[in-house]
Amino acid sequence: DADVTQTPRNRITKTGKRIMLECSQTKGHDRMYWYRQDPGLGLRLIYYSFDVKDINKGEISDGYSVSRQAQAKFSLSLESAIPNQTALYFCATSARDQPQHFGDGTRLSIL
Amino acid sequence: SQQGEEDPQALSIQEGENATMNCSYKTSINNLQWYRQNSGRGLVHLILIRSNEREKHSGRLRVTLDTSKKSSSLLITASRAADTASYFCATPYSGTYKYIFGTGTRLKVLA
Image (cartoon, rainbow over all chains, first blue to last red; front, side, top):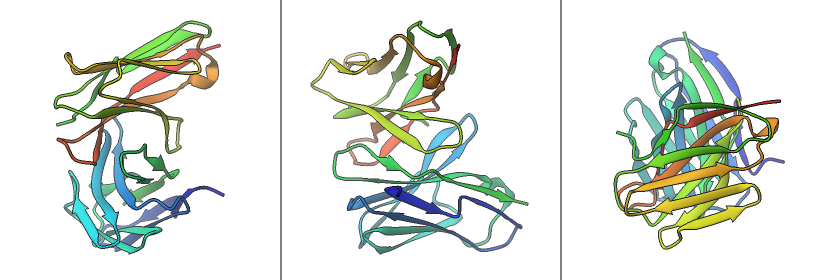
């Protein structure tokens, strides 16, 4: 089983819909991250959490919200999806000062 | 703006040749990481090099770090078709524990 699991893997939805992307991990890491990847722009940090009670905005948090339900679960929500949020979304985890471990991503298309 | 920038953006070589890609960054760092991303998959950590290290090896991978020039290089020796992927450097942002990824180098190894 994967250490970092993202669901769903693919999602197509319409403008204005609320979308939730989920991430769960079995690595026991306290730090979790959400990134989006667009062609030619690399990965950009949306939100990150260093423990259950700690949530921080990244570079591009506008239009997104997150919830850290437990140490192992970190979800990303798009309250009212818009087409320019079409992208590949990645969840990652890490221990302090250690490399990040990524899920396989969610490909999100907003029509 | 991106903290880490890879160069070149794309590289195409023959199997058996060496591949070198470079990363430049802007602020002081305590470590730098290299990741690989196969098409449609999450990033996989390759090597972490700390600021007090100048060179690090892992199998066919060699990473160098020059903190005076704020740059790092990743060398893949005796490349294989399976090395075809995008390679990213990641650096901690401004003394924090969140990482900024560059836009990546797309490596294609021709059999």
